[in-house]
Amino acid sequence: MLQVLSSAWPLLLGMGLLMVGNGLQGTLLGVRGNLEGFSTLEMSFVMSAYFLGFLGGSRMAPEMIRRVGHVRVFAALASFISSVMILYPLVAHPFAWVVGRMVIGFCFSGVYVTAESWLNNAADNSVRGKALSLYMIVQMIGIVSAQALMLVGDPSGYDNFVIASVLISVSFAPILLSVSPTPSFELTRPMSIGRLLKTSPLGCAGMFLLGGVFAAQFGMSAVYGAKAGLTVAQISIFIATIYIGAMLLQYPLGWLSDRMDRRQLILMVAAVGGAGALLGFALGGHYGVLLAASFLIGGTTNPLYSLLIAHTNDYLEHGDMAAASGGLIFINGVGAIAGPLITGWLMNDHVFGPPGYFVLIAFLLLALAAYTAWRMTRRASIPVEYTGAVSPMSPVGTPMAVELARDSAVEPPRREQA
Image 1 (spheres, one colour):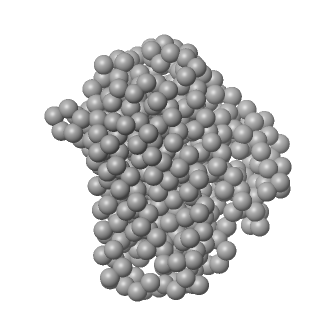
Image 2 (cartoon, rainbow, N blue to C red; image 1 turned 45 degrees about the vertical axis):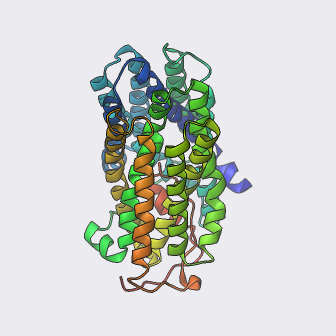
Image 3 (cartoon, helix red, strand yellow; image 1 turned 180 degrees about the vertical axis):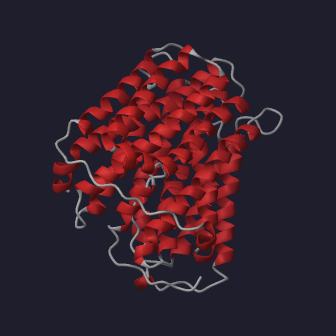
């Protein structure tokens, strides 16, 4: 662990600051949009635009890096992100925010690809698993810390937008001023969707469904809190609890998955997450219950992301894992684009109102549990001793992070007939 910190601390520090800025702007927009009088449907388009931009960036960033290099891509994308952060309060119009969120999603995707390739270069095979774990922990801590900054300034003013912009600008300094050499860059092309579906129907369906869940968590949580009448402090704690649950339960569930039928665990975890969402829908008016529901949702959905990638890898040769995971991330991104739009419609007063936030999450997680149960009847399980180890993955990661996770696997899994 000390070896990882000594070689990658500038990157980890920079990414921590970056996630604070990103987490702050996501929550801030949800609260500020309500103050500006934006409708739930308008805010759903704003939040969905981030994931559309992120998906586009994850496809284009590798080529940008190959053409002009890591440093130039970092500097260019940083300037765009910082600029958009400042423009949000100056141009408070839904269309302008949609464009801004799309630009920020694209830029953050490119930043993640660049940073993760640097992390991959800084760690050798013996410590790549630890490096990935530290990277994920730093991301979660950054998002949780961002919620506390919501209390620093008035959401109706400019202070918090300036703070987010400054954090993004400062986050690049440790990375760009580091003496670490610029890494070579090569990213495996994603496997075709048809081959992925044949290899792991559960992996593909699960990642698509989880895309909608993650988009609701990351994009619509603050919108829900504002529409439900929560204070800024209550919204911040509500969102922080989601990521605290993710951070605390990721490793215990990963440990379990290496010791039991992975599909059984996916079924149970999805069912618990769905039950948590139903709890929030029925009793979310009680703040303590709302926090319990957010902990269950965050603590189950984030580990499910890692479990589904690991499950798919169980049916692949070691050399095919990165290509397959890149395709899974693309499928997840497609689901994420639709998530806020559907959530926004469900949250309209003529449908469910604010509790509609939990309806989509419950439906998607329970659908995943049901589909997993059905898939268990279609083919036999792989013996536990032949499955690969779970590597913790963050939903905001890119295919480069997946390639890093591939190299941290303890033992290559055995390929099976789909």
